Image: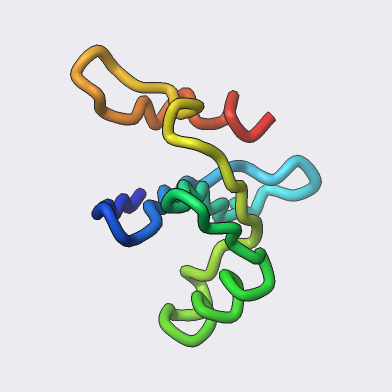
Length: 87
C-alpha cells in the first residue's frame, strides 16, 4: 500500500486484490487525479513499467475521486474497504 499526495501531483493507492480466476494476487492502482487531469491507463502503465520493478507494476488502474474513498473519521483510507470501490 502506498500513498502520495500534493496539490500538484496525482495521488495513487496500491492494493493487492485476490484474482477471481487464479490464486495469484493482482496489483490494482487506485488513482486520484489532480483537478483537470484525465489519466490515460496506457500512459500510467508505461510510466510504471519505466519506474518500477516488474513485479510492482499494477495489473489494473482504477480512476476515482477522493470523495469516493472509504475514510475513517480521522481521514485515513480504510484499506480493508477498498475492494468495495473496485466492485
